[in-house]
Image (cartoon, rainbow, N blue to C red; front, side, top):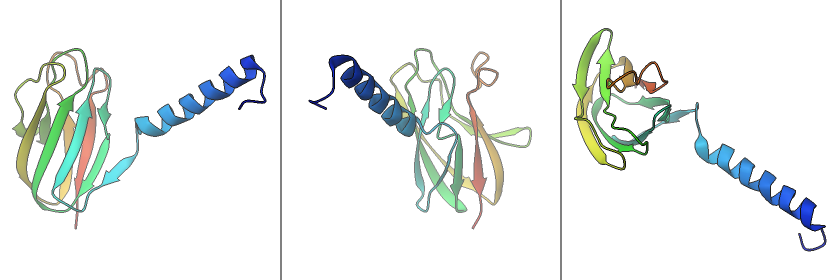
Amino acid sequence: MPGLPPLRRALAAGAGALCLATLASGCSHTVTERGHLVRLIVTEYRMNPASLRVPPGELTIVVRNMGRLSHNLVISRGDRAQAHTTPMPPGARTQLTVIVTSGRYVLDSSLFSDRDLGIYGTLTVSG
């Protein structure tokens, strides 16, 4: 961008950074995993990825808290919790290994009002 005036160069660089940030955030897409290991990030207002699709069997979820508050991960089917992690302080990482069968599960954080703030996702098991 050497031929552009300074203001246009700055705007072009900012637009490029915005595009990269949008692509990197991946807020609402579904991630399909063929293996039995998935990585999940939680913050105050979202779970990323928000939707997972995996085959039945043993599943290990590595959860990282990238937020500023403590969060946990709860896997529920219907109204019943199937498994959960202990609360994770900011920056912490933990993993949870579960056996999942075909169906739909809810992933969320049960601390404070986390679900109301948007910290939830879905886990679809099929195969």
